[in-house]
Image 1 (tube, rainbow, N blue to C red):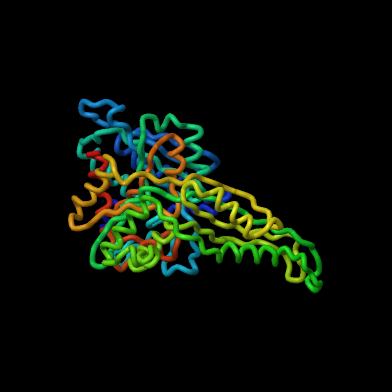
Image 2: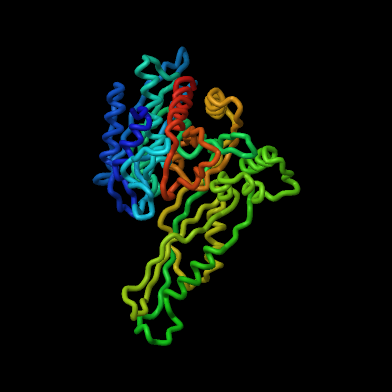
Length: 434
């Protein structure tokens, strides 16, 4: 019989909540209602919010005991996940990405790590607390958002803009892409996400002259666009270490037996193996072209071609990077900003950090915990607009050989079943005792 956390995650994977972006989505309502029913079984009152038809988020509040303290002394904690997933091409997978298949000791499917595993761990941890008749020390705001994979326009940002009272009294939050283990030089370490890069999604628009495909055409929109895309995609952005990444590189060098004065940050990160998949992107700006569009027939030169570029910068560098991109591609290509969101960097210290570290080490005492900046982004960006400090803490103890960073938006996404049990236990300890 499948363990309860894995069963919930499996059920969630079977809801095809694919988010194609720009408002196109299969919708999250069924998944939100499923999770809401799980919370209601625990005696919690749920509220559902639709930013658009089918784009449902669900929120509930767990009352804290406070034990002689008031809410100003012990503010509420937001614990949040998202229910949407990025598209998956079944032809490239070895399993049906929406079947929630269990094999080789793992749960497979789109969302297994991003982030229906954490959604299930949240429910499991709350079950362990509430069904045992226990109460957390502070209020918990439990939120499952729609539309995170599109920047939260129909999810977290919508609720922050229209329902800020849901998060009243909260000053901190935890969510995805942190607290998972990596193994380096025989040492297991957990990466606790203390920040995330800023997000800028741009569209490049090249215009030219429409004509027959046999013409001599210097003003070819696709040619101009291709040249601009190549320049942006091949731009090698310099390493820029922040307080967080300096601390991380120092600790990685210690574990790997390297001298950071002699070995560059990139080399140290690459020496860690699969962990480098996430960490390298936190050391610099990245500008990745992700979609090309132009033309409508083989023998017709179109008068317009477009490309999408995913830009991630360190907090505060957004405008400088946009200016450099403009200089790089020239004035002949239009740049349209389709979505922009803030970068975050929070300290690797304080009561919440101490509690997260303590929860991890109580279940894995031989490990160490390191801070890192997420190269992507989470719904913590939206909550930061309410003054809520967000961290990534979806704890998973993983096999050394598993390329976990490669699972995010990748093919054959999967998570070990025993890691889900570990995460439920660690998360439950944190939610009960913090």
